[in-house]
Image (cartoon, rainbow, N blue to C red; front, side):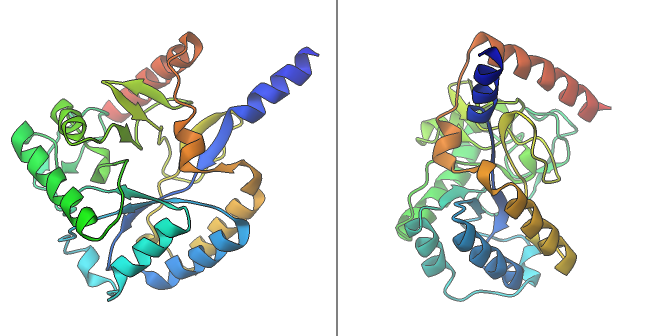
Length: 254
C-alpha cells in the first residue's frame, strides 16, 4: 500500500515543461518547423519565449520570417504558451554574479532603476498587445534579474516567471516560479521543471537527439498550466528547494 502511494506521489509530481528561448523573427526556422511538426504529432504544448522587440545583432544574422506575428498568433491558438522573453534582448549591464540567481554575465534588466525596468517591460507588453497576443509569464534573457525586476513585473501585472531553483514550482516575492535548472535536457526521477532550449545553436544531430528525448519521455512532458498549478510552499517543498538553491548558487559563485 505504501509503495503504491509513493509511486502515485512520484507520478503526480514528475514532469518536464518544454521551453524554447530566443524566439523571434530571426532564428533557425528550419529547425523550429521540424519541432513544430514533432509537437503536433506528439500533442506537446511548449512554452515559447518570444522577444517582442528584438534588437540583438547576433540574432539578427539569422533568416527572417516576414509573417512572424501571424505565426505566433497561430501558436497561441493551438494552446501553446507565449512567454515574454525580455524586450529587446540587448545586454547593457554586467551583473558580476550579483543578480538574484547568481548566474552572472550580462543583462538587459539587472542594475537599472525600477522606472527603467518598468519602461522596458511595458514596451514589450505593448508590442504583444498590438499583435493581439496575451502574455501572463516572463523570463529574462540570461536568467538575470534583481529585485527591481520582480517589482516591475508585478507592477505591470505579471507575477509568473519561468526561472529559479527547486524541484517543484514555488512562490517567492509574490511571484510564482517554475524552476529551470539545467542547460541540457534532463528528465529527473521526481520534480517539475522546465528546459532551456536555444535552437540557434543546433546542428542536425541536435534535433535528432531532441526528437528522441521528447519521444522517449512524452508521457512526462507537461503543459504550462499543469506546471503552474503545482506551485506550492509546503514545508517539504520549501525545504528541498532551500537546500537545492544553496548548493546551486554556491556552485555558480565559484
